[in-house]
Length: 283
Image 1 (tube, rainbow, N blue to C red):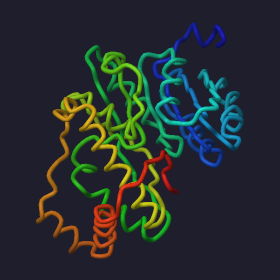
Image 2: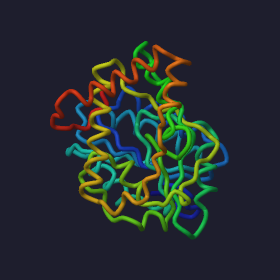
Image 3: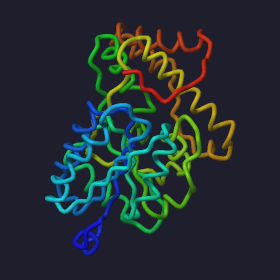
């Protein structure tokens, strides 16, 4: 790192685990580098187990980052696995406030500054922005129309694809364990009143097509079950809202096709056997 970077310091460190994300990492970094009023930012891309040129694409943005007074570091790990990538990013980070960002997520220009402000307190805090669920295929668009309206996505701070913690919050856990759902694991280290949703949004793409939606939803369910089994004390912080029948009926009447797709995916997950989980998002 250069002395100029050290002298100014960084308010935030953005850690981006990226496995075979050459097609998407550029868009992720371009959106980050378009941030407003963020001050110097440290960005660490951890290319883990990549068989493509994710690392070299990410390194091509170092000059742009330097022009902004940011520092971009790329760690190229032979080993795959998201928890290992997150731990590698944490080990290299200098800034105390951490933003954990999936490589397929794109932030809006005001999000980093709002996260930094929300987390600039001495007590433990967790923060995220407003999720814009993105989908391209007809089935996934129908699924997304309902998903963005379920209580968990509308009424709490889900942190899907992007979550941030301050220094006191990061002290709540040590290394990321080898589990399926790192986002849920971190979220449940904070009580509901310690979680902050800022107004700025970010774009979070979901799996495309029925088969991939089923695969990813099964993995999500397995991740919740795994945390409940391994870390039962964390479940006291679970604030998943109820999804009463009357609310489901309203959604079904408002969007019959979307509700049919959403319910069909949920039913398929229940009826099909659970297989060994992997880390793919099934785009």
